[in-house]
Amino acid sequence: MRLVTFSDDSGTRIGALDAAGAVRDIAAAAPSLPRDMLGLIAAGPAALAAARDALGKAPVVAGAKILAPIPRPPKNVFCVGKNYHEHAKEFAGSGFDGGAKDVVPPFPVVFSKPHTAIIATGEPILSHLDPTGGLDYEGELAIVVGQGGRGISKAAALSHVFGYTIINDVTARHLQKRHSQWVLGKGLDSFCPMGPAILTADEAPDPTKLRLITHVNGEKRQDALVADLIFDVPTLIEAISAAITLEPGDVIATGTPVGVGIGFTPPKFLQKGDSVRIEISGIGVLENPVA
Image (cartoon, rainbow, N blue to C red):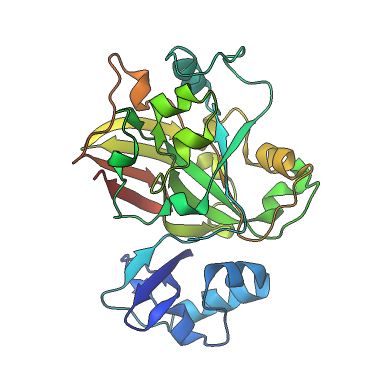
């Protein structure tokens, strides 16, 4: 099931995309369910099963506007840097790596983006917020946490996954380099496009089989299987939860594959008027214009 958060004249609530891509109003078909995504996730497996049962009789919503599936997670969005082998190499050779000693990190590199960076598919990436002219894209698979916890083992990690979505880890490269860290280059408003939907974990029991493809203005830039991750989904959940309690609805972006703008000579930075389209099999398409 592909769950969405959407709005219309009646307000904001949860729904699901049917096979044709139309938004179905789960809240109308099952009024007892939570009307927001965080509430649905926190309500556990019984609520998800009820949502799945309601989908068949949920009405189509004409004119629905799809929002980010989780507009405000419990915490900042967790993000993982340099987590594909070839991307780690291209980043190390780009001059933007801030003097890191290891091309391939021995442990996950984790930073975060504030919720104010989150936007929905179709909404504009605000290029003017990066006055340095180094705007870049990073297509990423993101984990949505279901059952929370601390000290989650790799063996148990997938049972804590509610589902998966797409994130564009938009980056102001010169700011990233200037500050020798990543939050101020990656956490700007509009720099975390998310969506369009959450693919529930039962639809992707083996996330390594998912494929990510990024196009910029129709040109394919990234194409990789999640199997190419350096640190896989269970490893990331174990590492982050070791001493940080994960909560239902927390989001973990798993890293980007080779093919980002700084990997080209000269770099192919985003410009006003560009369009970034990221597709992950089963989840759908996250597409945003650069304004």
